[in-house]
Image (cartoon, rainbow, N blue to C red; front, side, top):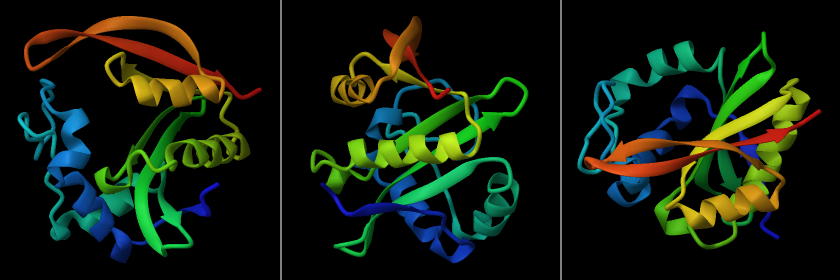
Length: 173
């Protein structure tokens, strides 16, 4: 089992977010979508995150989103990040988890997701949700292994081609 913990970053730690978001291999899963937010690169999935945006992003995001790095305590390195945003009215939270490319396939996702689930419970989340393309089979296996259920599917578009996306959720009550 990996010796990891979730680490809530400070502004000065956002260099790791920048590294991840500007890494083509890490962000390849995000490529090919027609999205309108600034700094998104269609071909690579990368998102610009210049240092001058760190403080503003932190002040706007951290009060309303749980955001943490996945820290391998043995390596003393950040290996990914995860987050969720709680809708306090419904108790539902949409989540995300990204393991940096160089650390994928090394057993980080399962323990990181377990820690994120525990944090979500502690913060009163009733249902944790995500949308995962069926092509991301390994990610779906981890989600299902940890109790997430298929809550439906929809058709998206990636690089102009139809893509089936699973809506998954985990009841935390």
